[in-house]
Length: 386
Image 1: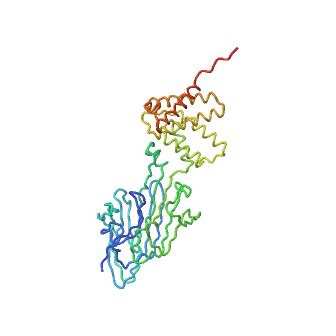
Image 2: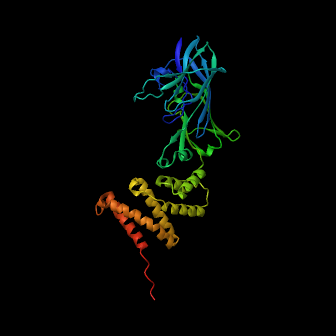
Image 3: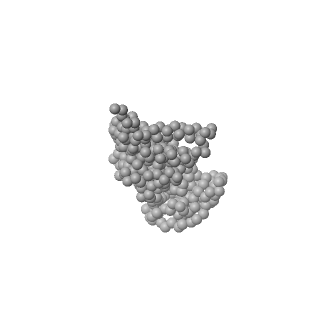
Protein backbone atom coordinates (compact mmCIF):
# COMPACT_ATOMS: atom_id res chain seq x y z
CA UNK A 1 0.00 0.00 0.00
CA UNK A 2 1.39 3.40 -0.94
CA UNK A 3 0.15 6.73 0.38
CA UNK A 4 1.14 10.32 -0.32
CA UNK A 5 1.11 12.18 2.98
CA UNK A 6 2.28 15.66 3.96
CA UNK A 7 3.91 16.81 7.14
CA UNK A 8 2.66 20.39 7.43
CA UNK A 9 4.45 21.56 10.53
CA UNK A 10 5.35 25.06 11.54
CA UNK A 11 4.92 27.50 8.72
CA UNK A 12 4.19 31.03 9.88
CA UNK A 13 0.67 32.44 9.91
CA UNK A 14 -0.47 35.60 8.10
CA UNK A 15 0.10 35.92 4.39
CA UNK A 16 2.42 34.91 2.99
CA UNK A 17 3.86 33.13 6.01
CA UNK A 18 2.43 30.09 7.72
CA UNK A 19 3.16 27.27 10.12
CA UNK A 20 1.05 24.18 9.69
CA UNK A 21 0.45 20.66 10.94
CA UNK A 22 0.45 17.43 8.99
CA UNK A 23 -2.15 16.78 6.25
CA UNK A 24 -2.53 13.94 3.74
CA UNK A 25 -2.03 14.16 -0.04
CA UNK A 26 0.19 17.27 -0.26
CA UNK A 27 0.98 17.35 -3.95
CA UNK A 28 -2.56 16.40 -4.83
CA UNK A 29 -4.38 18.82 -2.53
CA UNK A 30 -1.86 21.63 -2.24
CA UNK A 31 -2.29 21.54 1.51
CA UNK A 32 -5.96 22.47 1.32
CA UNK A 33 -8.71 20.40 2.90
CA UNK A 34 -9.09 17.29 0.72
CA UNK A 35 -12.50 16.21 -0.48
CA UNK A 36 -13.46 13.43 -0.23
CA UNK A 37 -11.60 12.93 3.06
CA UNK A 38 -8.17 11.44 2.47
CA UNK A 39 -7.71 7.87 3.66
CA UNK A 40 -4.68 6.88 5.69
CA UNK A 41 -4.02 4.46 8.53
CA UNK A 42 -1.12 6.52 9.82
CA UNK A 43 -1.96 8.57 12.91
CA UNK A 44 -0.25 11.48 14.58
CA UNK A 45 0.05 10.17 18.14
CA UNK A 46 1.70 13.30 19.51
CA UNK A 47 3.50 16.47 18.52
CA UNK A 48 5.71 19.02 20.27
CA UNK A 49 6.39 22.40 18.69
CA UNK A 50 8.87 24.96 20.01
CA UNK A 51 8.67 28.49 18.60
CA UNK A 52 11.51 30.91 19.39
CA UNK A 53 10.39 34.40 18.52
CA UNK A 54 12.52 37.37 17.44
CA UNK A 55 12.34 40.28 15.03
CA UNK A 56 15.19 38.87 12.91
CA UNK A 57 14.12 35.24 12.66
CA UNK A 58 11.54 32.84 14.04
CA UNK A 59 13.18 29.51 14.79
CA UNK A 60 11.01 26.40 14.78
CA UNK A 61 11.60 22.89 16.05
CA UNK A 62 8.66 20.53 15.47
CA UNK A 63 8.73 16.89 16.56
CA UNK A 64 5.99 14.43 15.54
CA UNK A 65 5.19 10.89 16.62
CA UNK A 66 3.61 9.07 13.66
CA UNK A 67 2.24 5.54 14.04
CA UNK A 68 0.96 3.03 11.52
CA UNK A 69 -2.34 1.71 12.93
CA UNK A 70 -2.85 -0.64 9.98
CA UNK A 71 -2.03 -4.32 9.73
CA UNK A 72 0.31 -4.05 6.74
CA UNK A 73 3.49 -2.19 5.87
CA UNK A 74 3.13 1.12 4.13
CA UNK A 75 5.40 3.56 2.32
CA UNK A 76 4.61 7.19 1.68
CA UNK A 77 6.09 10.52 0.81
CA UNK A 78 6.24 13.13 3.53
CA UNK A 79 6.20 16.77 2.50
CA UNK A 80 6.79 20.01 4.35
CA UNK A 81 5.20 23.07 2.71
CA UNK A 82 6.65 26.48 2.02
CA UNK A 83 5.37 29.65 0.40
CA UNK A 84 7.88 30.77 -2.18
CA UNK A 85 7.63 34.36 -0.86
CA UNK A 86 8.81 33.25 2.59
CA UNK A 87 11.49 30.57 2.12
CA UNK A 88 12.47 28.13 4.83
CA UNK A 89 16.02 28.82 5.97
CA UNK A 90 18.46 26.12 7.15
CA UNK A 91 15.79 23.44 6.76
CA UNK A 92 16.62 19.99 8.15
CA UNK A 93 14.68 16.79 8.84
CA UNK A 94 15.65 13.97 11.18
CA UNK A 95 13.87 10.59 11.30
CA UNK A 96 14.46 8.38 14.32
CA UNK A 97 17.68 10.25 15.06
CA UNK A 98 19.09 10.06 11.52
CA UNK A 99 19.27 13.06 9.21
CA UNK A 100 17.58 12.76 5.82
CA UNK A 101 17.81 14.84 2.68
CA UNK A 102 14.70 16.59 1.42
CA UNK A 103 13.99 17.29 -2.24
CA UNK A 104 12.24 20.49 -3.29
CA UNK A 105 9.05 19.90 -5.28
CA UNK A 106 6.65 22.40 -6.74
CA UNK A 107 3.07 21.31 -7.00
CA UNK A 108 -0.34 21.79 -5.42
CA UNK A 109 -3.88 22.33 -6.56
CA UNK A 110 -5.83 25.55 -6.30
CA UNK A 111 -8.55 26.08 -3.73
CA UNK A 112 -12.12 27.12 -4.56
CA UNK A 113 -10.96 30.73 -4.92
CA UNK A 114 -8.27 29.81 -7.41
CA UNK A 115 -5.38 30.24 -4.98
CA UNK A 116 -2.56 27.82 -4.28
CA UNK A 117 -2.26 27.60 -0.54
CA UNK A 118 1.17 25.99 -0.61
CA UNK A 119 3.49 26.08 -3.60
CA UNK A 120 6.81 24.47 -2.72
CA UNK A 121 7.40 21.29 -0.74
CA UNK A 122 10.37 19.75 1.03
CA UNK A 123 9.79 16.02 0.44
CA UNK A 124 11.28 12.73 1.54
CA UNK A 125 10.17 9.06 1.63
CA UNK A 126 9.30 7.08 4.77
CA UNK A 127 8.37 3.46 5.44
CA UNK A 128 6.26 2.03 8.28
CA UNK A 129 5.98 -1.56 9.41
CA UNK A 130 2.63 -2.67 10.92
CA UNK A 131 2.19 -0.94 14.30
CA UNK A 132 5.49 0.90 13.98
CA UNK A 133 5.83 4.39 15.49
CA UNK A 134 8.44 6.76 14.09
CA UNK A 135 9.67 10.16 15.22
CA UNK A 136 10.15 13.00 12.75
CA UNK A 137 11.91 16.23 13.71
CA UNK A 138 11.92 19.32 11.50
CA UNK A 139 14.00 22.44 12.08
CA UNK A 140 14.20 25.73 10.19
CA UNK A 141 13.71 29.46 10.56
CA UNK A 142 11.76 32.11 8.70
CA UNK A 143 11.53 35.87 8.85
CA UNK A 144 8.47 37.19 10.71
CA UNK A 145 5.85 39.14 8.79
CA UNK A 146 5.94 42.88 9.43
CA UNK A 147 2.53 44.46 9.81
CA UNK A 148 2.55 47.78 7.99
CA UNK A 149 0.22 50.41 9.42
CA UNK A 150 -0.20 54.02 8.34
CA UNK A 151 2.51 55.31 10.65
CA UNK A 152 5.05 52.64 9.70
CA UNK A 153 5.11 53.72 6.07
CA UNK A 154 6.65 57.00 7.17
CA UNK A 155 9.58 55.32 8.92
CA UNK A 156 12.92 54.13 7.60
CA UNK A 157 13.43 50.38 7.13
CA UNK A 158 15.66 50.27 10.21
CA UNK A 159 13.01 51.99 12.32
CA UNK A 160 10.28 49.71 10.97
CA UNK A 161 12.12 46.68 12.34
CA UNK A 162 12.21 48.29 15.77
CA UNK A 163 8.78 49.89 15.92
CA UNK A 164 6.46 47.79 13.76
CA UNK A 165 4.19 45.01 14.93
CA UNK A 166 5.15 41.55 13.66
CA UNK A 167 2.95 38.50 13.18
CA UNK A 168 3.43 34.77 13.43
CA UNK A 169 1.52 31.69 14.52
CA UNK A 170 0.93 28.00 14.08
CA UNK A 171 -1.65 26.30 11.85
CA UNK A 172 -3.29 23.22 13.36
CA UNK A 173 -6.21 22.78 10.96
CA UNK A 174 -4.15 20.83 8.43
CA UNK A 175 -3.77 17.96 10.91
CA UNK A 176 -7.44 17.04 10.60
CA UNK A 177 -6.99 14.28 8.01
CA UNK A 178 -4.78 11.84 9.86
CA UNK A 179 -6.24 8.62 11.20
CA UNK A 180 -8.26 9.59 14.29
CA UNK A 181 -7.47 12.60 16.44
CA UNK A 182 -4.09 13.99 17.45
CA UNK A 183 -3.40 12.32 20.78
CA UNK A 184 -1.49 15.17 22.38
CA UNK A 185 -0.15 18.47 21.05
CA UNK A 186 2.22 20.64 23.08
CA UNK A 187 3.12 24.06 21.71
CA UNK A 188 5.65 26.28 23.44
CA UNK A 189 6.45 29.93 22.76
CA UNK A 190 9.92 30.89 24.01
CA UNK A 191 10.49 34.52 25.03
CA UNK A 192 13.81 36.35 25.19
CA UNK A 193 15.28 39.77 25.95
CA UNK A 194 14.03 41.31 22.70
CA UNK A 195 10.55 39.73 22.71
CA UNK A 196 9.12 39.46 26.21
CA UNK A 197 5.80 38.07 27.35
CA UNK A 198 4.58 41.65 27.82
CA UNK A 199 5.39 42.45 24.16
CA UNK A 200 3.46 39.50 22.70
CA UNK A 201 -0.30 39.16 22.27
CA UNK A 202 -2.11 35.95 21.32
CA UNK A 203 -4.92 36.29 18.79
CA UNK A 204 -7.91 34.16 17.89
CA UNK A 205 -9.79 32.04 20.40
CA UNK A 206 -8.84 32.33 24.06
CA UNK A 207 -6.42 29.56 25.01
CA UNK A 208 -5.28 28.13 28.31
CA UNK A 209 -1.63 29.16 27.94
CA UNK A 210 0.48 28.45 31.03
CA UNK A 211 3.46 30.72 31.68
CA UNK A 212 6.56 29.35 33.40
CA UNK A 213 8.85 32.15 34.66
CA UNK A 214 11.73 29.71 35.17
CA UNK A 215 11.90 28.77 31.50
CA UNK A 216 10.34 32.04 30.28
CA UNK A 217 7.87 30.15 28.09
CA UNK A 218 4.15 29.97 27.45
CA UNK A 219 2.87 26.42 26.91
CA UNK A 220 -0.38 25.22 25.39
CA UNK A 221 -1.33 21.56 25.83
CA UNK A 222 -4.13 20.01 23.76
CA UNK A 223 -5.36 16.41 24.06
CA UNK A 224 -7.39 14.30 21.62
CA UNK A 225 -7.31 17.22 19.23
CA UNK A 226 -9.52 17.15 16.16
CA UNK A 227 -8.32 20.31 14.42
CA UNK A 228 -10.65 22.65 12.55
CA UNK A 229 -10.46 26.20 11.27
CA UNK A 230 -10.76 27.61 14.80
CA UNK A 231 -7.79 25.60 16.09
CA UNK A 232 -5.09 27.77 14.54
CA UNK A 233 -2.86 29.82 16.83
CA UNK A 234 -1.76 33.34 16.03
CA UNK A 235 0.24 35.96 17.86
CA UNK A 236 1.70 39.40 17.28
CA UNK A 237 4.67 41.03 18.96
CA UNK A 238 6.96 44.02 19.04
CA UNK A 239 10.74 43.89 19.21
CA UNK A 240 10.67 46.91 21.55
CA UNK A 241 8.61 47.64 24.66
CA UNK A 242 5.96 50.42 24.63
CA UNK A 243 8.41 52.60 26.59
CA UNK A 244 11.22 52.01 24.10
CA UNK A 245 8.89 52.76 21.17
CA UNK A 246 7.68 55.97 22.81
CA UNK A 247 11.23 57.09 23.54
CA UNK A 248 12.34 56.30 19.98
CA UNK A 249 9.46 58.25 18.44
CA UNK A 250 10.12 61.16 20.81
CA UNK A 251 13.74 61.20 19.66
CA UNK A 252 12.64 61.38 16.02
CA UNK A 253 10.21 64.17 16.94
CA UNK A 254 12.98 66.24 18.51
CA UNK A 255 14.99 65.78 15.31
CA UNK A 256 11.91 66.99 13.37
CA UNK A 257 11.69 63.69 11.49
CA UNK A 258 8.25 62.58 12.64
CA UNK A 259 5.26 62.74 10.31
CA UNK A 260 1.54 62.95 11.26
CA UNK A 261 0.61 59.27 11.59
CA UNK A 262 3.77 58.55 13.57
CA UNK A 263 2.86 61.49 15.81
CA UNK A 264 -0.56 59.94 16.41
CA UNK A 265 1.12 56.65 17.31
CA UNK A 266 3.31 58.47 19.86
CA UNK A 267 0.29 60.17 21.43
CA UNK A 268 -1.52 56.82 21.67
CA UNK A 269 1.49 55.26 23.38
CA UNK A 270 1.61 58.09 25.90
CA UNK A 271 -2.08 58.58 26.61
CA UNK A 272 -3.72 55.20 25.95
CA UNK A 273 -0.92 52.91 27.12
CA UNK A 274 0.94 55.29 29.48
CA UNK A 275 4.09 53.79 27.99
CA UNK A 276 6.33 55.93 30.19
CA UNK A 277 4.54 54.90 33.38
CA UNK A 278 3.94 58.49 34.55
CA UNK A 279 1.59 59.79 37.21
CA UNK A 280 -1.47 61.67 35.96
CA UNK A 281 -0.06 65.20 36.42
CA UNK A 282 3.34 64.25 34.99
CA UNK A 283 1.67 62.57 32.00
CA UNK A 284 -0.36 65.71 31.26
CA UNK A 285 2.81 67.83 31.42
CA UNK A 286 4.74 65.41 29.19
CA UNK A 287 1.89 65.29 26.65
CA UNK A 288 1.85 69.10 26.54
CA UNK A 289 5.57 69.17 25.80
CA UNK A 290 5.13 66.61 23.04
CA UNK A 291 2.26 68.57 21.47
CA UNK A 292 4.41 71.71 21.46
CA UNK A 293 7.20 69.84 19.67
CA UNK A 294 4.69 68.60 17.12
CA UNK A 295 3.65 72.16 16.27
CA UNK A 296 7.29 72.92 15.41
CA UNK A 297 7.43 70.27 12.67
CA UNK A 298 7.54 71.33 9.02
CA UNK A 299 4.62 69.99 6.98
CA UNK A 300 4.26 69.91 3.21
CA UNK A 301 0.53 70.51 3.49
CA UNK A 302 -0.12 70.05 -0.22
CA UNK A 303 1.04 66.42 0.10
CA UNK A 304 -0.81 65.51 3.31
CA UNK A 305 -3.71 63.09 3.06
CA UNK A 306 -7.01 64.29 4.58
CA UNK A 307 -6.51 61.96 7.54
CA UNK A 308 -2.95 63.13 8.18
CA UNK A 309 -4.05 66.75 7.86
CA UNK A 310 -6.73 66.12 10.48
CA UNK A 311 -4.08 64.69 12.84
CA UNK A 312 -2.04 67.90 12.56
CA UNK A 313 -5.11 70.11 12.96
CA UNK A 314 -5.98 68.34 16.23
CA UNK A 315 -2.39 68.71 17.43
CA UNK A 316 -2.53 72.50 16.90
CA UNK A 317 -5.95 72.65 18.52
CA UNK A 318 -4.87 70.71 21.61
CA UNK A 319 -1.56 72.53 21.99
CA UNK A 320 -3.27 75.94 21.83
CA UNK A 321 -5.98 74.90 24.30
CA UNK A 322 -3.31 73.72 26.74
CA UNK A 323 -1.52 77.09 26.78
CA UNK A 324 -4.78 78.97 27.06
CA UNK A 325 -5.86 76.82 30.02
CA UNK A 326 -2.55 77.62 31.69
CA UNK A 327 -3.09 81.34 30.91
CA UNK A 328 0.17 81.34 29.01
CA UNK A 329 -0.43 84.12 26.49
CA UNK A 330 3.07 83.97 25.02
CA UNK A 331 2.92 80.24 24.47
CA UNK A 332 -0.56 80.51 22.95
CA UNK A 333 0.60 83.15 20.43
CA UNK A 334 3.59 81.00 19.50
CA UNK A 335 1.28 78.07 18.65
CA UNK A 336 -1.23 80.35 16.92
CA UNK A 337 1.28 81.53 14.29
CA UNK A 338 1.79 78.20 12.44
CA UNK A 339 -1.81 77.22 13.30
CA UNK A 340 -3.17 80.25 11.42
CA UNK A 341 -1.09 79.46 8.33
CA UNK A 342 -2.20 75.81 8.42
CA UNK A 343 -5.90 76.72 8.51
CA UNK A 344 -5.49 79.49 5.92
CA UNK A 345 -4.16 76.90 3.46
CA UNK A 346 -7.16 74.65 4.12
CA UNK A 347 -9.67 77.47 3.69
CA UNK A 348 -8.13 78.69 0.45
CA UNK A 349 -7.93 75.20 -0.98
CA UNK A 350 -11.51 74.29 -0.05
CA UNK A 351 -13.19 77.64 -0.67
CA UNK A 352 -15.56 76.00 -3.18
CA UNK A 353 -17.45 74.68 -0.14
CA UNK A 354 -17.93 78.14 1.40
CA UNK A 355 -21.61 78.90 1.98
CA UNK A 356 -22.77 75.47 0.80
CA UNK A 357 -24.71 72.79 2.64
CA UNK A 358 -23.71 69.22 3.33
CA UNK A 359 -20.89 67.86 5.45
CA UNK A 360 -18.10 69.71 3.62
CA UNK A 361 -19.99 72.98 3.85
CA UNK A 362 -20.54 72.62 7.60
CA UNK A 363 -16.93 71.59 8.09
CA UNK A 364 -15.75 74.65 6.20
CA UNK A 365 -17.96 76.97 8.27
CA UNK A 366 -16.64 75.47 11.53
CA UNK A 367 -13.07 75.96 10.35
CA UNK A 368 -13.83 79.59 9.49
CA UNK A 369 -15.01 80.20 13.06
CA UNK A 370 -11.91 78.52 14.45
CA UNK A 371 -9.68 80.50 12.10
CA UNK A 372 -11.26 83.82 13.13
CA UNK A 373 -10.51 83.10 16.81
CA UNK A 374 -6.86 82.36 16.07
CA UNK A 375 -6.50 85.49 13.92
CA UNK A 376 -7.96 87.55 16.77
CA UNK A 377 -5.49 85.97 19.17
CA UNK A 378 -2.65 87.17 16.95
CA UNK A 379 -3.87 90.81 16.80
CA UNK A 380 -1.61 93.27 18.58
CA UNK A 381 -2.75 94.08 22.07
CA UNK A 382 -4.46 97.46 22.40
CA UNK A 383 -2.20 100.14 23.97
CA UNK A 384 -2.88 100.75 27.63
CA UNK A 385 -4.80 103.96 28.38
CA UNK A 386 -3.00 106.58 30.43
